[in-house]
Length: 586
Ligand code: ADP
Image (cartoon, rainbow, N blue to C red):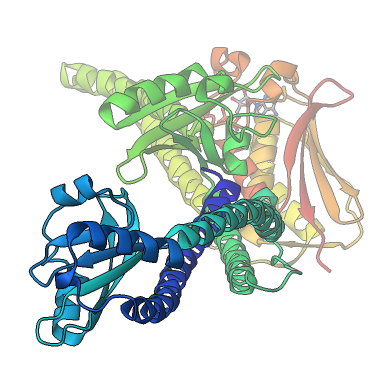
C-alpha cells in the first residue's frame, strides 16, 4: 500500500472514530435532556389528570375505560388506569376487550416506584403498542390504598431529532472523507518533496565514483521534520568521504607497494571477473588496455585460463608460460594463482622469469663449456702419464717428450682455472678496484713492455704514438690487464713479421684505446659472441693456437667495472681493431 493510501486511511479512520464518539455522546445527551423535559411535562399533566380521578378502585370497567379515553384525548397521550394489585382497568389506546387480555402491571418499574414514592417513571419498549414509550405514574387520591394513573408518550420527537442527527452525521462523514482525501494529498506531497530531496542527496553518494575519490558531503536545503534525517545523511556522507579517501589512499599505497615488489598482481572474483590489477601485471603480460571488469577469458592468455580452472578445483596452481611480445621476442612468465579462503576470490601473481631462465641456460652452458674445455688437457695429461708408466719412462727421449706435453697441458689447465677464478671474482665484484687518476701513456707503455718479448718471438713490430699526457679515472692493474689481454691476442692472431698498433682517440668524456693487429679479422657473426665465456672462433679452434676463450670475457667485465665499454671492428688493413673506452679523470 502506498504512502498516500496509508495517510488517507489513517486520517479517515481517525475522523470516523471521532465522529462516532461525538455521535454517541450527542445521542446520549439529547436522549437524557428529552427524557428530563418529557418527564417534567408528564408529571405536570399527571397531576392535572389526578384532579379528574378520585379513586380508581371505585370505577367500574366501563367508567374506567371512558375516563382513560377522555383523559388520553385531552392530554394527547396514552393514559392507563391501574389498580394497586396491578390490574389494568382503563387504557386510552386499548378497547375494553383488549384491556381484559392485558398483562398484570404490578411489576412495571414506574408502577412499583409510584406505589412506594407516589410517583415513578420508566422508559421501555411497549410490546402492546409496538413502540418505545416514556411512562410516568402517580397514585390517585385513595390515600389508604392508592391506585395508579399512568401517562405515556412515544419517543416520536426524539426519534425525529435522532434521525436528523443521523443525517448530519452522514454529511459530516462525507465531509471527513473529502477532508481525509485532501489532507492525505497535502501530507503526501509535503512528505514526497522532502523525501525526494533526501533521495536526491543520497543518490549523489551512489553516483559519485568511489574510484576517483570524489564523494562530496551532501548538502540538504530543506528543514523541518526531516531535519534530523538530513543532518544524519550529511554526517554519513562526511564520514563516507573520509573513509573513501582513506581506502583510496590505502589502495594506492598497497598498489605502489605491489608495483615496487616487481610482481604483477591480478585479482578475480568467483565469476572470473577481474576486480583488481596493478600496472606491473599489464607490463609483464604485455596487455595494452585497462583490464578492469574484464572476464578472465577476455585476456586471451590460455595459460591463465588454465591456471584459473586448476585453482578453482585445487585452490592453487603454478605454471610457467611464454608471452609473445609482438616484436619477435617472447617473455617467460611464472604465474601462481591462489584461491583466498576468506573472500572467495582468486589472486594471480606473475613474475617475469625471462632473465632467470637466461641465467639458468647460461649456467648450464657454462658448466658444459668448463667440462668440455677442461677435458682436453686433462685427457692429454692422463694419456701421457699412462704412456710414461707403461714403459716410455725407460726411454729418456720419449720420457722428455711426454713430460713436456704433461707440463704444457698442466700449464694450460692452471691458466684456465686461474682465468676462471679471476672472471668469477670480477663478475661477483670481489676484485677490489682502486680508482685513481692514471696517466694513459704510462699504462700503455707498461703493457707494451710486458708483451714485447712475445712480439719479438714473432718479429712483430709494436707501434704506439704517445698521446698528450691525459689522465683517466681507473684502477691501474685493471686497465693494464685489459691492455695486455688485447695485445696478447693481437700478437697471437697476427702473422710473423707483421705489426700491432695502439692508438688513443679523445672524446669529451672518455678516451678510446684501440689495439689494431695484422691478422685475418673476425666474421661479423663472431663479433657479437667473442666476448662471451669460452667462445672461440672456428678458425682459432682449427689452428694450433692455444687459448681458453676467457680472455675477452675478462676484458669485457673489467671494462664495464671501469665504467667503460668494449667492442671490435675490422681494421682498414683487414685485421682486428679491438677498442675499449675509459672515463677521463676530472
Ligand atoms: P683465447 O684464449 O682463445 O684467445 P679470448 O677470449 O682472448 O680467448 O678470445 C676469444 C676468441 O676471439 C679467440 O679464440 C679468437 O677466436 C678470437 N680473437 C680474439 N682476439 C682476436 C684477434 N686479435 N684476431 C682474431 N681473432 C681474435
